Amino acid sequence: MADYRVQLRDMSFLLYEVFQAEKMWAQSPMLAEQIDVQTADAILQECAKIGEQVIAPIAREGDEVGVSWHNGEVSTAPGYKDAWSTYAEGGWVGLGGDPDFGGMGMPKMLTALQEEIVCGADMSFSLYPGLTAGAALSLAKHGSEQLKQQYLPNMYSGEWAGSMCLTEAHSGTDLGMIRTKAVANTNGSYNVSGGKIFITGGEQDLSDNIIHLVLAKLPDAPAGSAGISLFLVPKYKVNTDGSLGDKNGVSCGSIEHKMGIHASATCVMNFDEAEGYLVGELNKGLACMFTMMNFERIGVGIQGLSCGVRSYQNALEYAQDRIQGRSLTGTKSPKLAADSIMVHGDVRRMLLTMKALNEGNRALALYISKQLDLSTYAEGEAQQKGTKLTALMTPLAKAFFTDIGLECAIAGQQVLGGHGYIREWGQEQLVRDARITQIYEGTNGVQAMDLIGRKLAANKGEYMKIFAEEINEFIAANQTAEMAEFITPLTQAAADFEKLTITILTAAVKNPDELGSAACDYLHVFGYTALAYMWAKMAKASLVKAPDDDFYQAKLLTARFYFARILPRRLSLSASASSGAEHLFNINDQLF
Image (cartoon, rainbow, N blue to C red; front, side, top):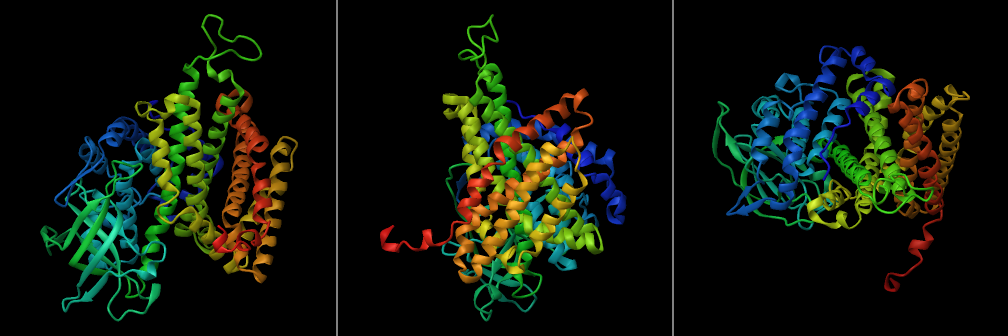
C-alpha cells in the first residue's frame, strides 16, 4: 500500500480560496479568539504528521491481528495503545470540544478535515476517538452541569473514552422497540438493565474508563420512541472527587467477527442494574442521542471519503510504476519493456473518476461543515439558513459519500488488478472497510428516506428551495465567457433537479409509496448536482491562477472531466427516480 499522504494543499485551497473560512471565523465573537489562518494551518500540519507517522503505520497490522476478547476483556491490536496515548496527549480527542471543560473549541470546518486525516490513516483507529467526541458532544449539549464537570474533561483528554449504545438484537432502525429498562433510585441515579449489540468501542484497553450513552425506557414510559430516555453509564463508577470507583454493572459479552474494520472492537454489551444518570429530560432521549447520531453520520460520510482518497493514492502510485503493454498512439517509454499502465484510457478513466469524486466530496464535506458552523456561531438569517441546510445535507453526506467511497475503493482495486485482490497490497482492506460505512449509523436506504421524507416532503421542499436559490444566485453572478463551460451544465442540472423534485412531491400526494420508490436515486441525483456546484466554485477559484500553476491547472482539467464524464450519471438516475412506484408494488410478494 502506498504511504498515506495528507492533501494539505487541497484542504488549504478549499478553506481559504473557495469558502473563505477565515472571514467567517473573524466575524464570529465565539471563534475570533479561538482560530485564525495561522492557527488552523498549524493544527492541520501537526495532525497530518500524526496521521502519516503514528496512525497510518499501524493500520495494516491492525487489520491482520484485529481485536481479541477473553473473559469479558478486549485487547486492541499492536500499536494502538501507544497511538491512542500520542493522539490523546496532543488534545486531538477534544479538538472540537467545549473550551469550558477542556476542549479546544475548534469549528467543524477544521474538525472535518481532522476526521478525514485520521480516517484516511486508519479507519479502525479513528472510530475510538470519533465515538468519544460524539458522546462528549451530546453530553455537552444536553447533560447537567454536574455531569459535564465530572465527565467531559477526562473525555476530551482521552483518559476516558465514549460509546453510544442504541441497537438491540430485535431493534435496529426502529428504536421505539428497545427493551433496555431504567429504574429510578432514591439518590437520583437509575439502574439500567438490558443488552445492546454492535457497540463500537464498547470495551477496549485504550482508556481508563468508558462512558456509555445508553438508550433505555422507564417502566411507565410512553410506548414507542416517545418513551425513550438517554442515560450516562460509566464502565467504572466515578467518586465525588473524580477518582475511579467500583466496577459498574457493565460487561462485554462478546465481540463481532466482521468483514472489515478488524481493529475496531464491535461489542455485545450487557447492562445488569448498572448505575446510570439521566442526560436531558425523561422521554426525550432520542432527541439527545440524535445530536450525537447526526455528528456521527457526517463523520461516517467522511470515512467513506477517506477510503476513496486512500484508494486513489494507492492506485495512482501503482499505475505510475506498473508497466504493461504499449500506448495505442505509440511507445511512450522506449527504454522499458512496456509503457506504464497510465497510457491506457480505461486506467485513466478510473483514476480521474476517483480524483473528481474525492475532491468534489471533500469540497462538499467542507460546505456542509460550514453550514454546521453557521448554525452554531452565526446569528439571524445566516444561522437559520445554516441550520436548515445542515439538516438537509446530513443524510446526503452519510449516504452519498459512502456510496462513492466504496465505488472508489473498488476502482482502485481494479487498477491494481490481481494485486488489488491480495491482502499484502492493502487495497482489499479498503474495500472491506468502506463497505460498513454504507450500513452503520443508519443504512443508506434509511438516509435516502430521511432526505426525501423528513427533509423534503415534510416541509414541502422548503430546505431544498434554499439550496436551489443559492445555486441560482451563483449562476447569475458568474455569467462570464470564462465560466460558461461550467455554468451552462450546472444551470441545466439545477433546473432538471428542481423539476424532478416537483415531480416526485406531486406524485407522492396521491401515493406516498412514490417517496420510498424514488429515494435512493433521488439522493444520488442530489449528490451529483451538489458536486457540480462544488466543481463550478472550485473552477472559479482556479481560473486566474491556472496558467502559471499546476495545482490550479489540474483543478480546471478535473472540473472539465467531472462535467463531461460524471455529471451525466444524473440523467439515468432521474429517469429511474421519476418512473413511479407501480413497478415495485405491482408485484405480489409471492411472485418475488
